[in-house]
Image (tube, rainbow, N blue to C red; front, side, top):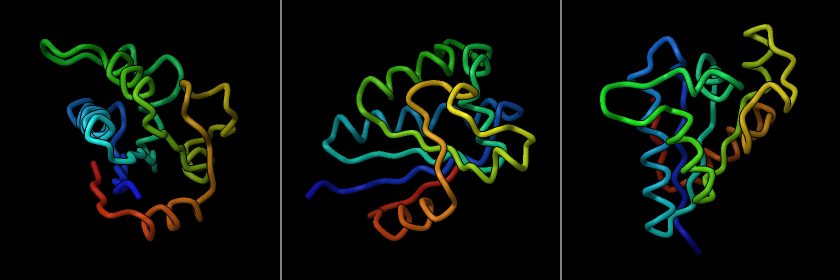
Length: 122
């Protein structure tokens, strides 16, 4: 059974320097044969809202959207907290978020935490 790493993204587009690491680390984990999931919580939800990721670019790095697309291509799961959507005044509907981000409930985070071999938060 593959090891599992959970990355919890609580930082949003207002702190762009904190957006790259979860995508890069999760993509690397997948290349190592590790099951990787990014859970977007609180302001972290803004990182996967449609139209936001392509506007964030730092230094010589590609845009956050490009890094996100690479992570998605490698099979990184991206889950969005439905309650965080409500807190930010969003509907929590799939059309608000980039593919393959999926809106889930709060219990999902608890389950992921209990099942993971490691957890990192940003």
